[in-house]
Amino acid sequence: MAFPMLRSTAILAPNAARGMATLKDIETRLKSVTNIRKITSSMKMVSAAKFSRAERALKPARVYGTGAASLYEKNEFESGEDKLVLAISSDRGLCGGIHSGLGRTIKAAHAEQPIKKTVIVGDKAKAILLKTLGDTYLATFNNVGKKAASFSDAIAVAEEVLSHNCETVEIVYNDFVNVVTYKALTKAIPSAESIEANDAIYTYDEVDSEVLKCYQEFTLANIVFHSIREQECSEQSARMNAMENATRNAGEMIDKLTLQFNRTRQAVITRELIEIISGANALE
Amino acid sequence: MAFRSIALRTAALCRRAMATEASGSTFPLTFGSPSNALFNAAPVKQVDIPSTTGHFGILPNHVPTIAILLPGVVSVTTEAGDVQRFFVSSGTATIHADSTVQIMAEEICDVGEIDGAAVRSALEVSRSKLASATSEADKAAAQIEVDVYECMVAVA
Image (cartoon, rainbow over all chains, first blue to last red; front, top):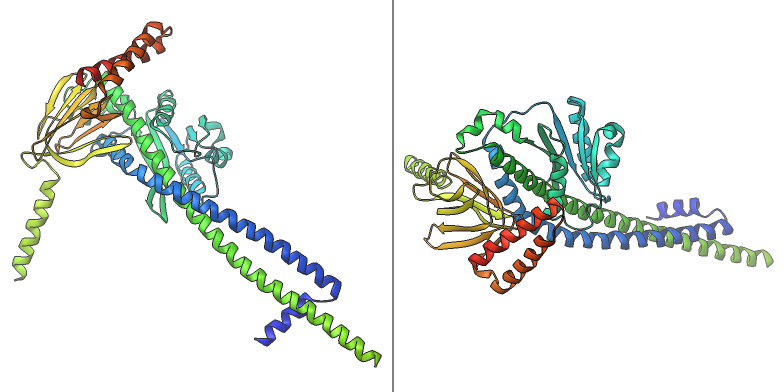
């Protein structure tokens, strides 16, 4: 263990004045990294609390969303080329790969088949997709992510989407798998006209245009609500993990810096002692 | 020995498969609101719903249909035989060919929990709101409020 120590002191301590400055530098760095660790640790705890709340809220939302989507799951409704992509993200970052994963999925889909119309929920997705899909933006929603979305928020988004009268709506969001995993998913929902044009709907008795229109509108709001809840849960879990990693890395950095600080301090003291002793020897 | 265990396993698998479809006297019902999932593919005997095409009851193997719900009472007869009544504000009901039923309602509340006095006063407030409403949208919204509260008063 002696050799590595000697080598590092040789690099760090050229002469007395330079040594003191290095000591202060290390001290400043140590203070700032300690602050960072405090911040990331508290962000992790806040995210953990929000995550447990989001997970609890997700349970009924999942039953609700899958129930609402049952008509589209059990029947094949082909729909036309006129697609509207609804991207669900939020305004806040520091959540790992949540927003960039969503951006990647949408850009890949755009490369396969150009997307003409988009509605964006959340400033992060808006910023990520601005360069490639900026001119397709029909509407954007912000103030997303500060508090949990309610059903009325989902209704507002669904109304905006429905006002553009497209044949299919594709909702892109991050599905919550478990605490450490989430997956970007795309859900396609046909419009009332597309459903009517498909024979599959006529297995259902007594269906007229009025009923179908109301049904499709309400179901779209339900599925949007479910997707928003899944996205919220995925985001909080990702933020919790990201902050946990950041806290751990900051802790490691603090340990390394503390060792460096102590070694430097000892080197400075040793050098001063050597100078005093050699000075005393020279006088004799 | 091996044959008997295989036979038992297939019998158990068959029983499990049948439990998810209408097994003669029950069908799986999923009934919930955005914040509350009351029934999740739970087997029930009968459900009565208030829809725009009339108040009708759903039994196993009902013809597939979709319906819009009006404000009113949904009564569920569970497998055990007891009847639970819930007030719903609005929503949709879907009955599929495999006899699964999904009822999605915006707001659900147990009929027993409705506070008659609070609902009556809310009805007065919404009636005055309807009288003083000016634009078409406000009038429609106020009318919906009055309808829902009138139904609640009738049920409470």
